[in-house]
Image 1 (cartoon, rainbow, N blue to C red):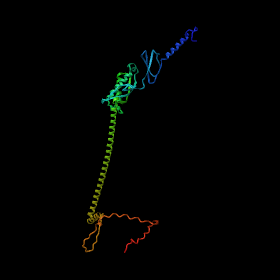
Image 2: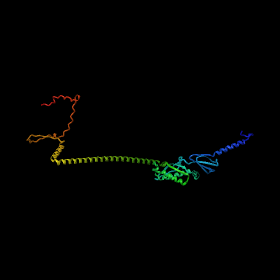
Image 3: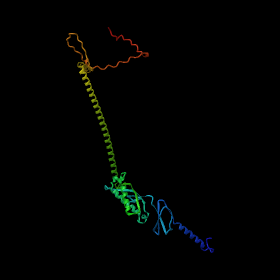
Length: 338
């Protein structure tokens, strides 16, 4: 059916149909879609002709026109490190205190002008990488190695971001840096052992400082407690002495008033009370001599020794129903004799 009656070649209608199908397919190849966070850059024989937004669009089929979609709404990431280990190598950096450091960091960036990004620079990613490395190098040069290894990184990421943004505005590459973050800071490979020893010594010094601070706080707390106890005891002693002095003064005033009213009676009472206090805890011996006795009386020293306190009398046993028990029979051997 497709061949001519003579069997040589295709029919003319078949050739025309095939050419028509090919023409339709070639024409439909100009359809393209731009995503929500993309921008379509249309070129005609390599020259820019139009920028299209999100949606379905059409351009003349290749090789007349071509389109390239660029992400303009999202944030891109670029990782850089000192060595070329799959990322972009930026070399060693020198810190403020003269120590070399291998700094690995990440750059977040986005396209703000697709036209400038594609047509005003030969390799915008290479230029961005170079500007980011230079900005980080300047920021590291303003920070010590100790600050870079700390949690805050010594403020180097913020300074590097500001420097990179200024450089991108100056070069007008159609790019914007949203942030630089330091991922890791290490000494050079040959000096890692020494730096690790230095870090361990720094941690030991910090631990010792914490221990000294804790001991100081404990000693100060104990000293403050002892001082408070001493002050409280002094105040209590002062209050007691003042109260006793006031009581003695009031007592003396009362005695003086009584003495003014009855001097003889008051004098006798004071003498009696004084002798009672003096003789209360002393041993006393009263000797009654017959009338006209003029001999010498010698008393044994045992009479003047202090006697131990007598033990309390034992309780008497109770009988039935709470009645006292009957007295025990007297022992004839211990009974007094006349």
